[in-house]
Image (cartoon, rainbow, N blue to C red; front, side, top):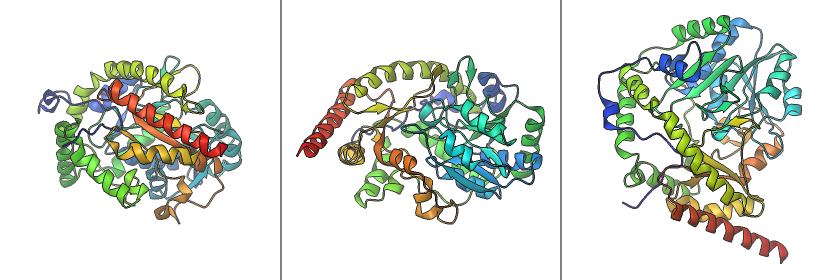
Amino acid sequence: MPVELPPTAGVPLRWSDLAPRGESDLAAAAAAWLGSGDALLTGSGTAALVVALEALKTLAPRRRTVAVPAYTCPLVPLAVVRAGLLPVPVDLAPDRFDLDPDALATAVDDDTLAVLPTHLAGQVADIDAARAVAARHGTFVIEDAAQAFGATRGDQRVGLAGDVGLFSFGIGKGLTIAAGGLLVARDPAVRAALHESAARLLHRHPLHELMTCIELLGYAALYRPSMLGLVYGRPLRRALARRDVIAACRDDVGLGVPLHRPGRWRARVGVRALARLHAAHATDSERAARRVAALEALPGVRVCRGVPGSSPVWPYLLVQLPDAAGRDAALAQLWPSGLGVGRLFARALPDYPFLHGVVPAAAVPRARDFAARTLTIGNSPWLDDARFARIVDTLRQSLRARAKAGAG
């Protein structure tokens, strides 16, 4: 089996993490780690969003729309629709993953229940701009920190500045229990509504839990370069061979949103792994700092970063190239190479065929441009300097070829 590097920097599980005994209150452990007084554990980040929206509906029952980034996980609009609401895609700021404040101001009105600024790629989004727009209409702010558990702005963890903070413990999100979500809230009334919504919506599903436990065991056994090709590399290359970019990005999600609670064993695994997360983030940040400098030495290349004064986590590097053709040329070589290079989301939300009828058509040119010019580079400890140099050299050659083509 050839070496296959993971596209994100997850926390590898130890066999001792799988012991059947130990503390099983992952919600309490995560709340303490975040500095939040309370947290609620759900079966996935998507389920967490459904629970949050259903809770906020009880506090503002006449509101019917949710403003979401036009470039985000396609599960987000599915969760919005599952909660009986309408997703409104909002364009991005120029060359940023943040919501554009002007576009957001146009999209939000007195019918808007919530705005979802998103901390993408472990980077910290501009929550202040989203809060300012939301405050004009009494709209709630849900911080989507699914990819940024542990990132900070100033001395505060992300997820605590909005009305609701949302995290994911899915595979690829750093800390994982195979599938899981977490909700936090500052206001007691919102917190109470979250718990009431969870009690109404979330149930135990033994068969689903058994299958997820097997998936977590598989993660513990296969999350290593010698084995990852079986469960990640082969399906990826099959999708690339048939030119199915949506499947290659693993964006071909089902339309349903399972609503369940994680079992105690998976929660115990999460508590044990959480004890190593701070150290993992520190080494990931050191590694990323060196590699960001090398990438941005290439002409026209930039690595997406969060707002000033923030300390991100680095599950992967989200890299923006000068044009779509150059990005595609580089990916043609790097994506099937086993080096942990790929794409985040395949398209802007209105452009997924399976979301037609779910996400309204919208003019979101910057989101489409962002989707067309970005690629991701994994930041796992298995990506050594020699392999990273191969990635940089491939990007350099692609940029040179594009420059020659432009000059010709």
